[in-house]
Image (cartoon, rainbow, N blue to C red; front, side, top):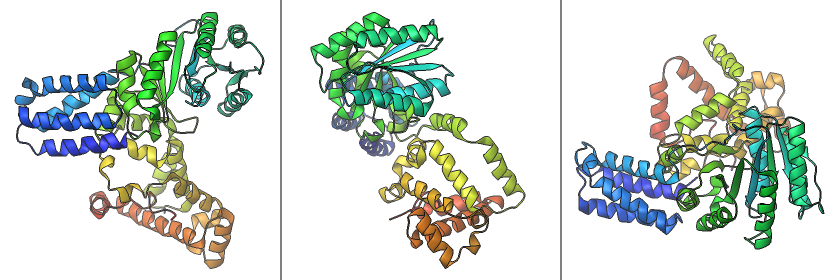
Length: 457
């Protein structure tokens, strides 16, 4: 996420840290680079101008001139200004209203509205403990209605039926009445989209809004469309009283222009980031955490929250007890660790949140592949319980059977067994207190720890 911008800022910060003190001249050179980095990231020009102006004023002020580490002081200023233009703090959904709290979702076709409703309904059910009802008012695309019904089943929330040919306003009104009578906490309304902004779509959205008076009106926009995302958000905000924005496909957005521009241009907060295809891939938007990621500082708070939510504490305690007793790290243990990583959004998501990981060489980053992890789980799933506990019994014929059962080559099974042996060795070193030696091995060797990379080629 925001890789291009992170790389540019990383280079700028490295050069600044080499300066003994900051002068108007080297600040001017640095700000030119920052300006180019933001423009290349497709950040809106008014945002770039204000950002550069504010950073310059603060950089030439007392807080930098009196600092013992001017380079670090400048980085803090850039961080603070990034946070400011993205909205200072997380702006959560306002659910403190008389139920059902109606949330209307609008946006262009293809932006990810329906998928976002599936993710949001799961978020509300699992994290906010709400009873959720969803309804589709997109009567022009029967596939959209079916998609929402499927997502509702998948995440375990209720679906209010609708079909092509019905009046969208009547559907919304009926769903709202049903939600009230059956004591739902939240009603999520999916509206129709078009490939571009047009009068008919806006009039329909206004009519639905007038009929149900939603407590929140969220605009869903594809972050990869850059400044177009900002322009579309502005057009919708002029037609509807938007309360916030969901930025989708942020995991594929290497630039970050929409995230840095939407709040400043529209005045509306970004409430969520869509960071993948799974229904769990929705993150509350924290400007300070995103700014930290952009500047290569990671996002430890989000990582800790993810671990708290996702890690099976009983499994973790069982593994810890096993180590204390001196029992080996077997393939079943490896499988459990891989499943836990999957629950936390996969290796790619974890690496994105770890401080300093943006500075890893590309050849090391490329070793991280969530598909490889899923394939390794499939290999272990094709083994017998005895083979998982005692990998040493896996001979040539067993390897061929395991490879056939998991749809891989024998060399892939060999590679997994080799990685497991390396991890066993690593666990023994940890037990003996060899953490420093272990970190030197991986830090100096330029490779990922065994099991995290070097998968299938």
